[in-house]
Image (cartoon, rainbow, N blue to C red; front, side, top):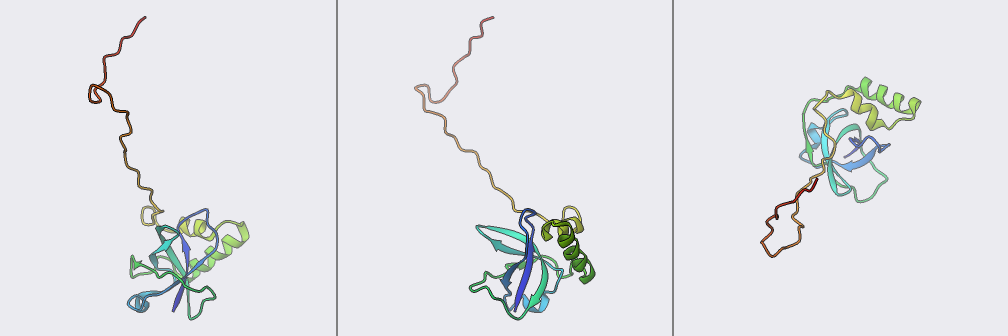
Length: 133
């Protein structure tokens, strides 16, 4: 079984095929919120449809089902697809407007502080500043 996802990256248009792990297969349906790998990050996505075949070889698997109840109904998914086509907006951007605030998360970027100060003779202590007026 395969799933077509609209990933939660608003600038990305289209849907992407993923393989469905056997343990998740009985629980997945169109409209469910899942996590999946996308490039070198993990993203959330909405299942747009389930299918028995895919033309893409070596698909990555869906990682997890975040909620067993679908977030979007089949009529909402049909409306999202129609709006995306008629307004020339990415499907993920239209779906993002339909998902309750705070429920869907876009990919996070992790920042960390690095100490790249040059070493000084006084072990990095700052010298007093003199301000002249």
